[in-house]
Image 1 (cartoon, rainbow, N blue to C red):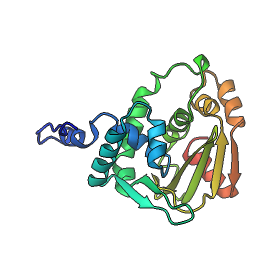
Image 2: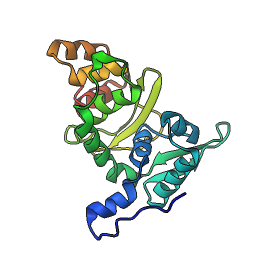
Image 3: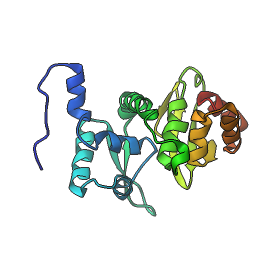
Image 4: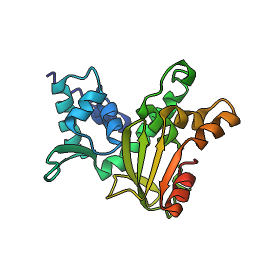
Length: 213
């Protein structure tokens, strides 16, 4: 594998790109925002990445302190990768900014299916308002077209999931995107009405406020 590139500039942007600027790195981190992932999960969700390159990128992110590797106990007994707390604090705002930049470059919803990940990013992640989340402490689960995403809201920010969720949101990816970006208020309201919320009523109300749902 070729040596890792380095800009050799004492500039905060260059230093940041030394860690995050390699191909596939941000997409690996994007996958881990949804919760713990096995190596095979990451490989399946990143078609086109070489197996050795994925392994190398994960090692680099672990060295940088942004990703953690854990061995789950029996009977599961598997290796999973997660964002570290440092990753949640430092990388998540970058992912949100890049996603916001790319939002109006998405193909129109009507032109084809929307992936669960796009539903999560556009419908959930970009709607998070730290000010509205003040005092909300919960682990949340989002089920989008059969794919599960888990995270916690704590101290006005997002973090890794801790334990069982107190609130679960179930939706189709297209409805999540339409609820956020629909062309009319009527379309947005109709899509929002098809999103199901389950769990503690206070947690549901807090989640809807924190994510503008």
